[in-house]
Length: 164
Image: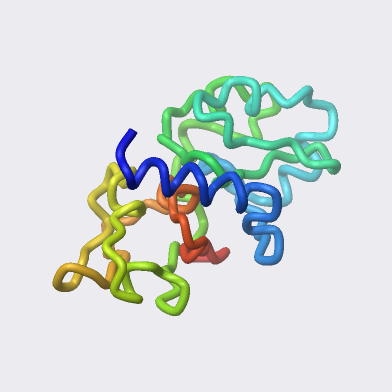
């Protein structure tokens, strides 16, 4: 196990209990047209989208609607949730980016404080994180709001804000 992996493991075990609770935003799977359709179409569904999600990031809330939880993983845009939606709330024809913006809090980010950390860049499949000099990560316009970087940040410095 590399030092970076050990540090991430140790810090994540402390953070998992309350991670992102204070800044909770409801993010939907990226295959819908009208957010109001969740309130009506998901009432009788058994949560097929959550069962089909390969990354297990879809959580069915108390209101029976799906939301995304980026605590441990992110969205690969694999289409499985949309293909399996029995109520046509989610559809592959309506595929879009997740309705959110990913931001790095410079005050909490280890790299912005001079500590060599690349935890956010490593899981990014879209090469959406640039580093100014050796430190100072910034999200670029390639970001798809997939969320893979969020759960990997040992300092909980990456937030996701609703609305693009």
